[in-house]
Amino acid sequence: MSESERSAKLEVSGVSMSYVRDRRRRLVLDRLSLNVMAGEFVTLIGPSGSGKSTLFRLIGGVERPDEGSIRISGREIAGERGHISYMPQQASLFPWMSVAGNISSALTTAGVGAKEAAALASQWLERIGLGDVAKEYPHVLSGGMQQRVSFLRALLMPRDVMCLDEPFAALDALTRAEMQAWLLGLWEAERRSVLFVTHSIEEALTLSDRIYVLSRAPARVLREIRIPFPRPRRADVWKEPEFVRLKEEVLELLQKGAEADHAL
Amino acid sequence: MDNNIWPRRALLPVLTLVGFVLLWQACCALFKVDPWILPAPSSIARNMWEDAPRLSGQLWFTLRLALKGLGLGIAFGVAAALLFHLIPGVRAALSPLIIITQNIPLIALGPLLIVWFGFGILPKLILLVLVCFFPVAWSMLAGLGQAEPHLREYLSMIGATRWEVLRRLELPASLPSFFTGLKMTATYSVTAVIVAEWLGASDGIGHYLVLKSKGYDTAGVFSAIICIVALALAFYGLAALLEKLAIRWRPARRGAAQGGRGA
Ligand SMILES: Nc1ncnc2c1ncn2[C@@H]1O[C@H](COP(=O)(O)OP(=O)(O)OP(=O)(O)O)[C@@H](O)[C@H]1O
Ligand SMILES: [Mg+2]
Image 1 (cartoon, rainbow over the protein chains, first blue to last red):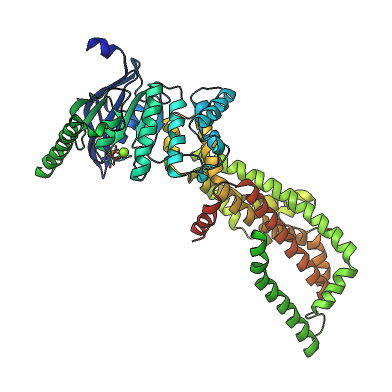
Image 2 (image 1 turned 90 degrees about the vertical axis):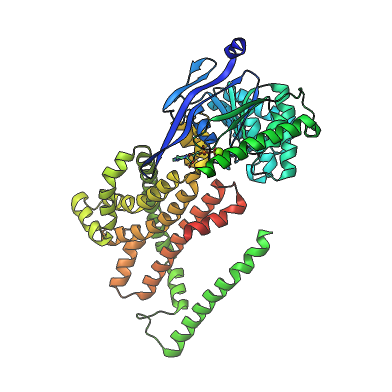
């Protein structure tokens, strides 16, 4: 365990955070601790409003934690921006930039030279089959295509940790399944350190190495679950009995959290 | 495809206009209206034709002055919008002054400027800049602040610098409102230049207008009015054309976005 702790890419330890609303302090994160190893795909799953996006804002340095530390590659980064790449729920492509321009401009923010960024963007767009729309404005793309571009933009940024905040929530079920398979293939080839947020238990079990199940706000880790399925992961892992068992376990945890809340 | 729709859309307004002119002509002939009260369209046209060299010379003079004032006004407007946007304190400090200057009637401000700066081009330019800069500055300022929150959030999450946020998000996002302001300013500038010339000039359509109205040459007055309206329409058209050229993304949503702003 101490061996693996040393290679943790992202370490969140004892982080608390509260917002002031209606002149009252509301605790959103309660001494939350979690980590992502190098090349690991870790998923946060928890009720809506539990503070997952807030955690991302802390890791991104947009907000500062009230207490606790956030380390990337062992270095304290709380309140510092520019250490992560990010894929938001909405594709968030800039409508006035071409598809390729959207990717390359994000890369220049991460310190890639302009020429190299442009070359990378066109080369990878070609590779994921979007070469012929590289010069178009994003509005000509379908929702799924926009999410692919958004993911590529996050993947290509030379940053230690990728944070993906419910990237497929806005997609229909079929496109979503397609996108999961696509992302799985691309991620298994690249093996970046990923922190992923989703509301879908199946999505979490299909993609992740490890899952943190969070409670309602203020968010605590209810359970940490290691997903035993081998990599590269088959698209039909959901047929495994172990998958069904894990799904029930997570569902029960989430339901219990909700009941405890009602009891209060 | 656009070309097929455009004449049909233009048909009705053109018909109304032609009908109006014909009615005007008929009334003048029927009731034998004195030409110094209301000249018939035909005599206005004849006057314009006969006076064409002088009119075009005056129009050229006015056009140059208007363009100079407009250019300066836009430059000041954009600079002010950026300054106010980037340093909020400046906005709070200066906006009362600016609002005051915008509420002084041109008719009052013009003579004062002439008293202070003489009869040269300077007071006219100042007047024009004061009129032109405001719509540009205010609409652009609004546009700079209205950039989509989720794009802003994305940029802060990846650690973009202030300059990158301005260049990649706020400036492009402000373009539609900038052009709304520009179209307004383009037409204001023509009115303002006429007022400036009316107050003191030896050339220009405004000056021509003064001469003709003092001489009860009503056909001449109408000729000047037609030139002024044409100039304002041309300026507006130019601004609209520039907008089309500059904003080519999101063609389907543009109409909706403008409708929303109008409401
Ligand atoms: N800027 C803010 N000011 C005040 N309260 C906020 C702010 N941002 C978030 N909150 C509150 O913090 C809590 C957690 O919000 P957050 O967006 O992190 O939840 P989430 O887990 O991402 O939810 P979801 O799954 O629905 O995206 C919510 O109760 C929300 O109302
Ligand atoms: Mg969220």
